[in-house]
Length: 337
Ligand code: ACO
Image 1: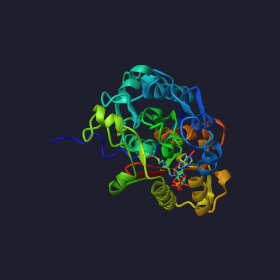
Image 2: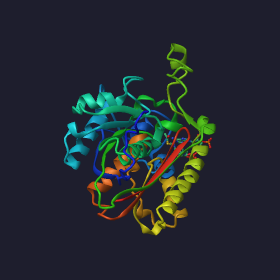
Image 3: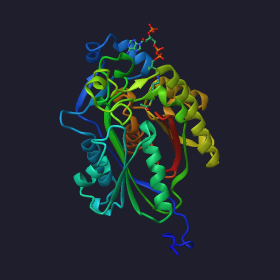
Image 4: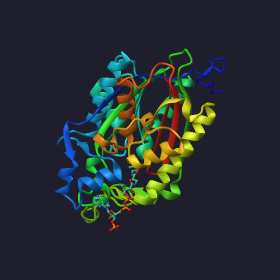
Protein backbone atom coordinates (compact mmCIF):
# COMPACT_ATOMS: atom_id res chain seq x y z
CA UNK A 1 0.00 0.00 0.00
CA UNK A 2 1.28 3.49 -0.87
CA UNK A 3 1.94 5.51 2.28
CA UNK A 4 0.66 9.11 2.32
CA UNK A 5 3.59 11.53 2.14
CA UNK A 6 2.18 13.68 4.94
CA UNK A 7 1.92 11.83 8.24
CA UNK A 8 -1.65 12.21 9.50
CA UNK A 9 -0.48 13.28 12.95
CA UNK A 10 1.12 16.45 11.52
CA UNK A 11 -1.12 19.50 11.88
CA UNK A 12 -1.71 22.04 9.11
CA UNK A 13 0.79 24.87 9.19
CA UNK A 14 0.18 28.60 8.83
CA UNK A 15 1.97 30.13 5.88
CA UNK A 16 3.61 33.56 5.96
CA UNK A 17 5.12 35.85 3.36
CA UNK A 18 8.61 36.32 4.79
CA UNK A 19 9.99 38.53 2.01
CA UNK A 20 8.93 40.42 -1.11
CA UNK A 21 10.70 41.86 -4.13
CA UNK A 22 10.00 43.47 -7.46
CA UNK A 23 11.68 44.65 -10.62
CA UNK A 24 10.60 47.16 -13.22
CA UNK A 25 12.53 47.71 -16.45
CA UNK A 26 14.27 51.08 -16.72
CA UNK A 27 12.63 52.27 -19.93
CA UNK A 28 9.61 54.51 -19.23
CA UNK A 29 6.98 54.81 -21.97
CA UNK A 30 4.80 57.87 -21.39
CA UNK A 31 1.29 58.57 -22.63
CA UNK A 32 2.84 61.36 -24.72
CA UNK A 33 4.94 58.81 -26.61
CA UNK A 34 1.88 56.60 -27.21
CA UNK A 35 0.11 59.66 -28.68
CA UNK A 36 2.64 59.35 -31.51
CA UNK A 37 1.73 55.69 -32.18
CA UNK A 38 -2.10 55.72 -32.15
CA UNK A 39 -4.89 58.28 -32.11
CA UNK A 40 -5.18 58.93 -28.39
CA UNK A 41 -4.30 61.58 -25.82
CA UNK A 42 -2.74 61.79 -22.39
CA UNK A 43 -6.03 63.31 -21.20
CA UNK A 44 -8.09 60.32 -22.50
CA UNK A 45 -5.74 57.71 -21.03
CA UNK A 46 -5.44 59.37 -17.60
CA UNK A 47 -9.15 60.14 -17.25
CA UNK A 48 -10.33 56.68 -18.44
CA UNK A 49 -7.66 54.54 -16.80
CA UNK A 50 -5.49 56.50 -14.34
CA UNK A 51 -2.34 55.40 -16.21
CA UNK A 52 0.35 58.02 -16.96
CA UNK A 53 3.29 55.82 -17.92
CA UNK A 54 4.44 52.22 -18.02
CA UNK A 55 7.78 50.35 -18.18
CA UNK A 56 8.99 48.45 -21.24
CA UNK A 57 11.63 45.70 -21.15
CA UNK A 58 14.90 46.36 -22.96
CA UNK A 59 15.90 44.54 -26.14
CA UNK A 60 16.99 41.07 -25.05
CA UNK A 61 15.39 41.40 -21.61
CA UNK A 62 12.97 38.46 -21.25
CA UNK A 63 10.25 37.56 -18.74
CA UNK A 64 12.68 35.28 -16.87
CA UNK A 65 15.14 38.19 -16.53
CA UNK A 66 12.46 40.38 -14.94
CA UNK A 67 11.37 37.45 -12.75
CA UNK A 68 14.91 36.57 -11.63
CA UNK A 69 15.63 40.18 -10.58
CA UNK A 70 12.38 40.33 -8.58
CA UNK A 71 13.24 36.94 -7.05
CA UNK A 72 16.71 38.03 -5.91
CA UNK A 73 15.22 41.13 -4.33
CA UNK A 74 12.64 38.96 -2.47
CA UNK A 75 15.35 36.54 -1.27
CA UNK A 76 17.39 39.43 0.09
CA UNK A 77 14.31 40.87 1.79
CA UNK A 78 13.55 37.46 3.33
CA UNK A 79 17.18 36.94 4.37
CA UNK A 80 17.45 33.48 2.80
CA UNK A 81 19.65 31.92 0.12
CA UNK A 82 18.50 30.53 -3.22
CA UNK A 83 19.53 27.01 -2.13
CA UNK A 84 16.83 27.09 0.56
CA UNK A 85 14.00 27.26 -2.01
CA UNK A 86 12.08 24.00 -2.45
CA UNK A 87 9.72 25.15 -5.21
CA UNK A 88 9.58 28.01 -7.71
CA UNK A 89 6.22 29.00 -9.18
CA UNK A 90 6.10 31.61 -11.94
CA UNK A 91 2.71 33.06 -12.87
CA UNK A 92 2.89 34.43 -16.41
CA UNK A 93 1.09 34.64 -19.75
CA UNK A 94 4.28 35.71 -21.51
CA UNK A 95 6.68 32.83 -20.80
CA UNK A 96 10.12 32.99 -22.42
CA UNK A 97 9.14 29.86 -24.36
CA UNK A 98 6.31 27.28 -24.32
CA UNK A 99 8.80 25.04 -22.60
CA UNK A 100 10.96 24.84 -20.57
CA UNK A 101 8.90 26.73 -18.03
CA UNK A 102 9.96 30.26 -17.13
CA UNK A 103 10.35 28.95 -13.56
CA UNK A 104 13.15 26.66 -14.82
CA UNK A 105 14.92 29.61 -16.45
CA UNK A 106 14.61 31.56 -13.18
CA UNK A 107 16.01 28.59 -11.24
CA UNK A 108 19.13 28.61 -13.40
CA UNK A 109 19.50 32.40 -13.21
CA UNK A 110 19.31 32.61 -9.41
CA UNK A 111 21.03 29.30 -8.59
CA UNK A 112 18.10 27.67 -6.78
CA UNK A 113 19.45 24.21 -7.46
CA UNK A 114 17.25 22.40 -4.90
CA UNK A 115 13.93 23.67 -6.26
CA UNK A 116 11.25 22.01 -8.36
CA UNK A 117 9.84 24.45 -10.92
CA UNK A 118 6.68 25.07 -12.89
CA UNK A 119 4.59 27.90 -14.34
CA UNK A 120 1.01 28.85 -13.51
CA UNK A 121 -1.32 30.16 -16.23
CA UNK A 122 -4.17 32.25 -14.85
CA UNK A 123 -3.51 35.59 -16.62
CA UNK A 124 -3.68 38.57 -14.26
CA UNK A 125 -4.89 36.32 -11.41
CA UNK A 126 -1.82 34.09 -11.64
CA UNK A 127 0.12 35.45 -8.67
CA UNK A 128 -2.71 34.74 -6.21
CA UNK A 129 -3.39 31.36 -7.81
CA UNK A 130 0.30 30.57 -7.25
CA UNK A 131 0.16 31.81 -3.65
CA UNK A 132 -2.74 29.41 -3.06
CA UNK A 133 -0.80 26.51 -4.62
CA UNK A 134 2.24 27.37 -2.50
CA UNK A 135 0.12 27.52 0.63
CA UNK A 136 -1.27 24.03 -0.03
CA UNK A 137 2.26 22.60 -0.44
CA UNK A 138 3.44 24.21 2.79
CA UNK A 139 0.41 23.44 4.98
CA UNK A 140 0.60 19.81 3.85
CA UNK A 141 4.31 19.66 4.88
CA UNK A 142 5.35 18.80 1.30
CA UNK A 143 7.67 21.84 1.04
CA UNK A 144 9.00 24.40 3.53
CA UNK A 145 10.10 27.37 1.43
CA UNK A 146 8.46 28.47 -1.81
CA UNK A 147 9.29 31.33 -4.16
CA UNK A 148 6.21 32.71 -5.93
CA UNK A 149 6.72 35.12 -8.82
CA UNK A 150 4.33 37.08 -11.01
CA UNK A 151 6.12 38.24 -14.16
CA UNK A 152 4.93 39.48 -17.51
CA UNK A 153 6.43 41.14 -20.55
CA UNK A 154 3.19 42.32 -22.09
CA UNK A 155 5.03 44.57 -24.54
CA UNK A 156 5.77 41.34 -26.47
CA UNK A 157 2.05 40.64 -27.08
CA UNK A 158 0.65 44.15 -27.51
CA UNK A 159 -0.74 45.27 -30.84
CA UNK A 160 0.82 48.74 -30.98
CA UNK A 161 -1.76 49.79 -33.59
CA UNK A 162 -4.76 49.00 -31.32
CA UNK A 163 -5.54 52.00 -29.12
CA UNK A 164 -8.10 49.96 -27.15
CA UNK A 165 -5.32 47.87 -25.58
CA UNK A 166 -1.86 49.35 -26.20
CA UNK A 167 -2.38 52.18 -23.71
CA UNK A 168 -3.15 49.80 -20.83
CA UNK A 169 -0.23 47.44 -20.35
CA UNK A 170 3.39 47.37 -19.19
CA UNK A 171 6.23 45.02 -18.21
CA UNK A 172 7.42 44.02 -14.71
CA UNK A 173 7.80 41.34 -12.07
CA UNK A 174 7.06 40.87 -8.38
CA UNK A 175 7.98 38.03 -6.04
CA UNK A 176 7.24 36.69 -2.57
CA UNK A 177 8.92 34.04 -0.40
CA UNK A 178 6.47 31.88 1.54
CA UNK A 179 7.33 29.79 4.56
CA UNK A 180 5.76 28.46 7.75
CA UNK A 181 6.67 31.00 10.43
CA UNK A 182 4.32 30.24 13.31
CA UNK A 183 2.88 32.73 15.73
CA UNK A 184 -0.49 32.71 14.00
CA UNK A 185 0.49 35.25 11.35
CA UNK A 186 0.08 34.46 7.69
CA UNK A 187 -2.44 33.60 5.01
CA UNK A 188 -5.84 33.33 6.71
CA UNK A 189 -8.20 32.70 3.83
CA UNK A 190 -7.96 32.27 0.06
CA UNK A 191 -10.48 32.02 -2.77
CA UNK A 192 -10.09 31.18 -6.46
CA UNK A 193 -12.71 31.07 -9.23
CA UNK A 194 -12.93 30.82 -13.03
CA UNK A 195 -15.49 31.14 -15.81
CA UNK A 196 -14.25 29.59 -19.05
CA UNK A 197 -17.54 30.53 -20.70
CA UNK A 198 -16.30 34.12 -20.87
CA UNK A 199 -12.87 33.37 -22.33
CA UNK A 200 -13.62 35.44 -25.44
CA UNK A 201 -13.75 38.84 -23.72
CA UNK A 202 -10.02 38.85 -22.96
CA UNK A 203 -7.61 36.53 -24.75
CA UNK A 204 -4.70 35.97 -27.10
CA UNK A 205 -5.96 33.71 -29.89
CA UNK A 206 -2.72 32.95 -31.74
CA UNK A 207 0.60 31.27 -31.06
CA UNK A 208 -0.86 28.10 -29.53
CA UNK A 209 -2.17 24.92 -31.14
CA UNK A 210 -5.43 26.49 -32.33
CA UNK A 211 -3.84 29.23 -34.42
CA UNK A 212 -0.15 28.29 -34.67
CA UNK A 213 2.50 30.77 -35.71
CA UNK A 214 2.13 31.24 -39.49
CA UNK A 215 2.79 34.34 -41.53
CA UNK A 216 -0.95 34.75 -42.14
CA UNK A 217 -1.82 34.52 -38.42
CA UNK A 218 1.02 36.86 -37.47
CA UNK A 219 -0.10 39.40 -40.12
CA UNK A 220 -3.61 39.26 -38.60
CA UNK A 221 -1.98 39.97 -35.20
CA UNK A 222 -3.57 36.87 -33.68
CA UNK A 223 -0.62 36.70 -31.28
CA UNK A 224 -1.76 39.94 -29.60
CA UNK A 225 -4.20 40.70 -26.76
CA UNK A 226 -7.86 41.00 -27.80
CA UNK A 227 -10.19 42.61 -25.30
CA UNK A 228 -13.81 43.65 -24.98
CA UNK A 229 -13.02 46.54 -22.62
CA UNK A 230 -16.54 47.33 -21.44
CA UNK A 231 -17.45 43.71 -20.62
CA UNK A 232 -14.05 43.13 -18.95
CA UNK A 233 -14.59 46.27 -16.87
CA UNK A 234 -18.00 45.09 -15.64
CA UNK A 235 -16.86 41.54 -14.89
CA UNK A 236 -13.74 42.78 -13.09
CA UNK A 237 -15.70 44.87 -10.60
CA UNK A 238 -18.33 42.22 -9.85
CA UNK A 239 -15.86 39.34 -9.59
CA UNK A 240 -13.35 41.15 -7.39
CA UNK A 241 -16.10 42.34 -5.05
CA UNK A 242 -17.48 38.82 -4.79
CA UNK A 243 -13.99 37.41 -4.12
CA UNK A 244 -13.29 40.09 -1.50
CA UNK A 245 -16.52 39.43 0.39
CA UNK A 246 -15.96 35.65 0.31
CA UNK A 247 -12.53 35.74 1.99
CA UNK A 248 -13.57 38.42 4.46
CA UNK A 249 -16.57 36.32 5.52
CA UNK A 250 -14.36 33.24 5.79
CA UNK A 251 -11.86 35.18 7.92
CA UNK A 252 -14.68 36.64 10.01
CA UNK A 253 -13.56 40.19 9.19
CA UNK A 254 -15.33 43.34 8.01
CA UNK A 255 -13.87 45.62 5.31
CA UNK A 256 -13.06 48.26 7.92
CA UNK A 257 -10.81 45.75 9.72
CA UNK A 258 -8.41 45.91 6.74
CA UNK A 259 -5.26 48.02 7.05
CA UNK A 260 -4.94 47.98 3.28
CA UNK A 261 -6.30 46.42 0.11
CA UNK A 262 -3.94 45.43 -2.71
CA UNK A 263 -6.04 45.03 -5.87
CA UNK A 264 -5.15 44.10 -9.43
CA UNK A 265 -3.83 47.21 -11.17
CA UNK A 266 -5.92 47.43 -14.36
CA UNK A 267 -7.86 50.66 -14.16
CA UNK A 268 -8.22 53.28 -11.42
CA UNK A 269 -11.95 53.49 -12.08
CA UNK A 270 -12.30 49.77 -11.34
CA UNK A 271 -10.43 50.23 -8.03
CA UNK A 272 -12.55 53.30 -7.15
CA UNK A 273 -15.76 51.38 -7.85
CA UNK A 274 -14.61 48.54 -5.59
CA UNK A 275 -13.62 50.98 -2.81
CA UNK A 276 -16.99 52.65 -3.10
CA UNK A 277 -18.95 49.37 -2.96
CA UNK A 278 -16.85 48.17 0.02
CA UNK A 279 -17.46 51.54 1.70
CA UNK A 280 -13.71 52.05 2.19
CA UNK A 281 -11.73 55.23 1.48
CA UNK A 282 -9.63 54.98 -1.70
CA UNK A 283 -6.56 55.78 0.43
CA UNK A 284 -6.88 52.28 1.93
CA UNK A 285 -6.06 50.83 -1.55
CA UNK A 286 -2.50 50.39 -2.83
CA UNK A 287 -2.35 51.94 -6.32
CA UNK A 288 0.67 52.09 -8.62
CA UNK A 289 -0.95 51.70 -12.05
CA UNK A 290 -0.34 55.40 -12.72
CA UNK A 291 3.39 54.52 -12.99
CA UNK A 292 3.35 50.95 -14.31
CA UNK A 293 0.00 50.36 -16.08
CA UNK A 294 -1.37 46.82 -15.98
CA UNK A 295 1.51 44.35 -15.68
CA UNK A 296 -0.84 41.31 -15.54
CA UNK A 297 0.40 38.61 -13.13
CA UNK A 298 3.09 40.98 -11.83
CA UNK A 299 0.73 43.79 -10.87
CA UNK A 300 -0.46 42.68 -7.45
CA UNK A 301 2.98 41.26 -6.62
CA UNK A 302 4.71 44.58 -7.37
CA UNK A 303 2.07 46.46 -5.35
CA UNK A 304 2.56 44.03 -2.44
CA UNK A 305 6.31 44.66 -2.50
CA UNK A 306 5.82 48.43 -2.59
CA UNK A 307 3.36 48.24 0.31
CA UNK A 308 5.83 46.11 2.28
CA UNK A 309 8.83 48.36 1.63
CA UNK A 310 6.96 51.59 2.33
CA UNK A 311 5.62 50.31 5.66
CA UNK A 312 1.95 50.28 4.63
CA UNK A 313 1.51 47.06 6.62
CA UNK A 314 2.48 46.61 10.28
CA UNK A 315 2.86 43.23 11.96
CA UNK A 316 -0.62 41.94 12.82
CA UNK A 317 -2.41 44.08 10.19
CA UNK A 318 -5.05 42.47 7.99
CA UNK A 319 -4.38 42.84 4.25
CA UNK A 320 -6.69 41.89 1.38
CA UNK A 321 -5.29 40.96 -2.02
CA UNK A 322 -7.81 40.67 -4.85
CA UNK A 323 -7.28 40.04 -8.57
CA UNK A 324 -9.05 39.45 -11.88
CA UNK A 325 -7.89 38.33 -15.30
CA UNK A 326 -8.43 36.49 -18.55
CA UNK A 327 -9.96 33.05 -18.39
CA UNK A 328 -11.93 34.48 -16.80
CA UNK A 329 -10.16 33.99 -13.50
CA UNK A 330 -10.39 35.82 -10.21
CA UNK A 331 -9.02 35.28 -6.71
CA UNK A 332 -8.54 36.83 -3.30
CA UNK A 333 -6.58 36.30 -0.15
CA UNK A 334 -6.65 37.72 3.38
CA UNK A 335 -3.28 37.81 5.11
CA UNK A 336 -2.40 38.78 8.65
CA UNK A 337 0.92 40.54 8.17
N1 ACO B 1 -7.74 56.79 -26.85
C1 ACO B 1 -8.79 57.49 -27.28
N2 ACO B 1 -9.99 56.93 -27.49
C2 ACO B 1 -10.13 55.63 -27.22
C3 ACO B 1 -9.06 54.85 -26.76
C4 ACO B 1 -7.82 55.47 -26.59
N3 ACO B 1 -6.75 54.83 -26.14
N4 ACO B 1 -9.48 53.58 -26.59
C5 ACO B 1 -10.79 53.57 -26.91
N5 ACO B 1 -11.17 54.80 -27.32
C6 ACO B 1 -12.47 55.24 -27.77
C7 ACO B 1 -13.32 54.10 -28.26
O1 ACO B 1 -13.02 53.80 -29.58
C8 ACO B 1 -14.70 54.70 -28.07
O2 ACO B 1 -14.96 55.52 -29.18
P1 ACO B 1 -16.42 55.54 -29.87
O3 ACO B 1 -17.37 55.98 -28.78
O4 ACO B 1 -16.26 56.51 -30.97
O5 ACO B 1 -16.64 54.12 -30.30
C9 ACO B 1 -14.56 55.59 -26.86
O6 ACO B 1 -13.16 55.82 -26.68
C10 ACO B 1 -15.10 54.97 -25.58
O7 ACO B 1 -14.60 53.65 -25.51
P2 ACO B 1 -15.02 52.73 -24.33
O8 ACO B 1 -14.51 51.36 -24.58
O9 ACO B 1 -16.47 52.90 -24.06
O10 ACO B 1 -14.21 53.39 -23.14
P3 ACO B 1 -14.29 53.01 -21.63
O11 ACO B 1 -14.68 54.17 -20.84
O12 ACO B 1 -15.04 51.72 -21.41
O13 ACO B 1 -12.75 52.69 -21.31
C11 ACO B 1 -11.22 50.86 -21.08
C12 ACO B 1 -12.07 51.70 -22.04
C13 ACO B 1 -10.21 51.79 -20.42
C14 ACO B 1 -10.50 49.80 -21.86
C15 ACO B 1 -12.13 50.26 -19.99
O14 ACO B 1 -13.24 49.64 -20.61
C16 ACO B 1 -11.41 49.26 -19.15
O15 ACO B 1 -10.54 49.59 -18.36
N6 ACO B 1 -11.80 47.97 -19.22
C17 ACO B 1 -11.20 46.93 -18.39
C18 ACO B 1 -9.84 46.61 -18.92
C19 ACO B 1 -9.15 45.62 -18.06
O16 ACO B 1 -9.34 45.57 -16.87
N7 ACO B 1 -8.33 44.83 -18.73
C20 ACO B 1 -7.41 43.98 -18.13
C21 ACO B 1 -7.99 42.82 -17.41
S1 ACO B 1 -6.74 41.95 -16.66
C22 ACO B 1 -5.97 40.84 -17.74
O17 ACO B 1 -6.22 39.66 -17.64
C23 ACO B 1 -5.03 41.36 -18.79
